[in-house]
Image 1 (tube, rainbow, N blue to C red):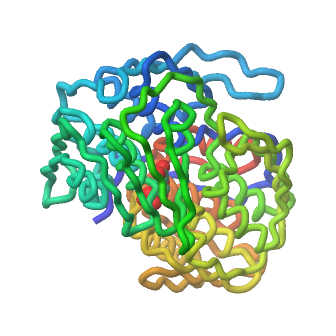
Image 2 (cartoon, rainbow, N blue to C red):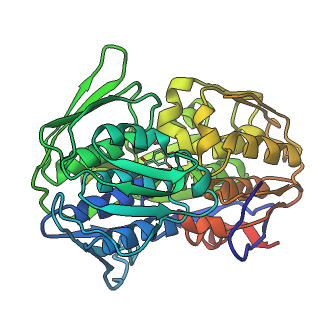
Length: 460
Ligand code: S3P
């Protein structure tokens, strides 16, 4: 059964004018969650610039506040000459590793899978009891992948039907350092174990079969922890953290989120005549698989002003409408573009020829079953698509506008909402989504930003 926000806002996206302009999409969601959590585990005051002020991250801010850290928004400043955004400046005063306090109430993490799984790791390493809940989407997502290793570290869990939220976590007074081999390539699970390991005496090691996003490792180092990373013989990584460091507060600059940038990037590629520049996009190689795939499809995306900010590679991207061709996306690329398959499928729908995407089993346990949502939505808009257990094949229109006209059920999934609004921009007739409110979790203001470029998104 599908779910929606309390007062859903249906939206329809019609054929767009050529998209033109320069934008900065909101801050990186993964980095924003980690900045708040690690800031809360530091000694001293951390200043964060560019924090994503989406609902998911605000839930994490409220969670660390409920556990005794200070986390507050600072007044907005005017944009500087380079067009940096106002806002997103935050201050976090931490309690030190192991220093958080038991909250008085249940912690509601809303739609935030990353937020709740990482916070479970934090709580697992503290001598306290915390109950987490979330919205209908989060309450159907599997938590066993994090509770499994965290139990080995000494934490105890009581969840609905075993491994579902609402769930009570009894953290370990003396967490044990463990070595854990990830059964699925998941940065959330790796991060939960490392965050619990912060308060364990000795070395906690996570072995991942394929490298996944390494923002936790980068930021732990940024705050002074010792993290060792070795490549394994079979192409994975061994990540070891020395427990009980003193984390020292340091400023964090959050780049624009590549996973959010993906939507205007694909929109600019598929709406004829478009040219859009995206500022300050985080280009961590473990996140940028979509750009590799789009380059293989023939996308014209120029990287400008490449630089490093707070340990993460960042650049501006100039995107021009391009003639795309279908490709085969190998399964080993999935971890570096795991959240980008819905929007890639939209690009594939107007490409010349077939696009095949393999190794997508994890898409079934995201905010919604994204494999099924993408296949159903594309079919409703006249696109030929084949959905397998763990793959998707999309037949491209060869540059012609797909029929459109479908109504897509968002089911509390922000990325499904945005992907289909982008599809509507390139279709003959508008595409409708049943609930635009879900987009506020990661990309507040998406419709206005896109309309400012030339899109036509309005209440449906
Ligand atoms: C994330 C990891 C990925 C991704 C999610 C954010 C993170 O999830 O899909 O949106 O910040 O660590 P998995 O770890 O489940 O692959």
